Length: 147
Image 1 (cartoon, rainbow, N blue to C red):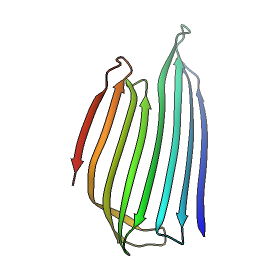
Image 2 (cartoon, helix red, strand yellow):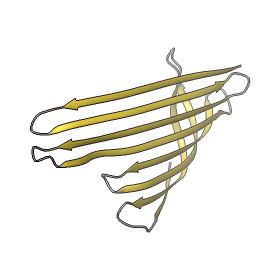
Image 3 (cartoon, rainbow, N blue to C red):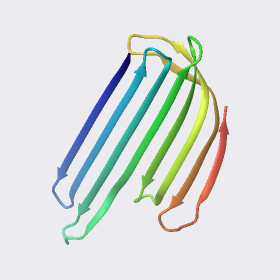
């Protein structure tokens, strides 16, 4: 049997004064755990946007971010697991047009509690990122390995 866990958060904030500000965010998370096999899938999506307007009426975007992640985890033994993690990030205000990361690794659950296991990554193998700043069209690959 499969077990789904879903969550949706929506936020909106207004501020008035010397600067008028409007912020909104949207967060979605879904997780699937399969009882007939030791696998779980986790997907998250987040959208943040904010702008401000000064007394002269000039508007400026102060936050524009999209983030999406996907994690696949497979338990190989009672406490050991293998997982892959994929993340996409876009932060226009900071100049990051596209940031894509992929990693894979092994982990060990060192603590079990009613809330759930606390994973300890043993090895994260070759996280690969590809960033493209908003001001250029060139790509800047980055490869790093962590232990």
